[in-house]
Length: 482
Image 1 (tube, one colour):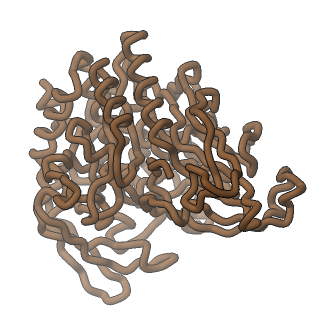
Image 2: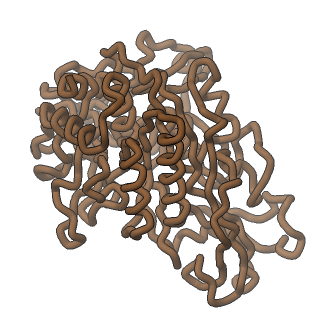
């Protein structure tokens, strides 16, 4: 099977086909299985909002800057990304994207938005798409469009409610860069992003295919993208930058366990056109970085977090709008409600355990991992694969770290639009060295230990260089750029 570049999502589910009235009658009795379960993919950890009381729903926080934007100090600069484009190569946007990114507030370039995919079809044996050989795929198509599949068939009309099989991963990534409209209870506000006035070019290079398998007699859901899809998206942006003479940052919150020359050539081509390329490092921990993040010429992002996540032990729903200290190298305390023990941390930041590190056995150098950025409990509009409804999820992953880096690069490019890839990478790495992440470890309140508060605490450990050069902030990047 051709190598796929899989986004950082690994949700396995089983549904009955009675959910899908549009399925062909011949396969009406087939159950649905997640066909990606036998394929390589990274993990991301989405968590839906905790159920709230009426009082919590109606409480308007005083500061609508989320902690992750505050951590990178994006709100302290006058730069907002005006005139800079960010191409989000991902799953596209949910069909109700205007609810999150209102025109006039967020700039979405629908004219240049595009989608790349293949047709996938049952062949029975010898196919080149699935590991079992039951499926093959056709030539690359560029008429897919940039809207996520929101209902349970391969090519439906948009569904305004955002339900269906497709993923909201690209929508969540975009929301980190631009900010998004947030409504819950009587709270109705706009949440600030890292670079709120950039223009987003949605490029769908990760798709989902629902196909009937007449041997196993099941519907199979495949997710991800081929090298051809990803490479085509990169080349498309390179062509666009050259033709329109615009500065574009590519954000790729995706990755796989290997690479092809086709992918590498596309990256080098886009860089030659003046495009800046940022990619997630991967969510495989010590197993190694994913590609394209592992390419030396790509700016890679590791996933850091705030040690005071979920209130540092004292949970309330709006903790994610709390103020982060300006000095990240300060002490803080985490209280374990289950044991009554208070722990001291030396830093406000920590490195997540899933964030990929360079693996020498894969030919990766510690120098290939560039910077760290927030990638833990980042709130935003999201939807997993399946028929579930979108919601405001907290999501963990280097997929969430990358858009912080892309947004920072856009703010730097606003002042210095002629910067090329190597220059931008040098600036961001030098800026990150000013906020190192020494391997002191940290104690963090962790939602994965309980379905609801009180949340237990867990220790996190990492080694030098596991976070790249250090933690990236906007103010330090602008200082280095001059």
